[in-house]
Length: 88
Image (cartoon, rainbow, N blue to C red; front, side):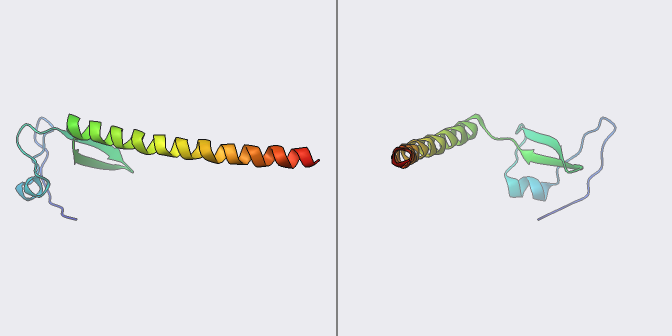
């Protein structure tokens, strides 16, 4: 973790220290997200459109695989439940 103190200007602007910009690869014109988490102001690099698309694709790929596994598991459970109920 790295931290630094910076001053809020008259228009509410802050300067991200150069060391942090360099460490995170922030360049002029990059977008950042400013949010409040647990009563703390957090500034983080915004994801590019390409990065967001990659994460969404990765999520849905994992979700699809999980859904397929649940479907297969349900077939087995359903079959076992039917057999158990037939015994009664």
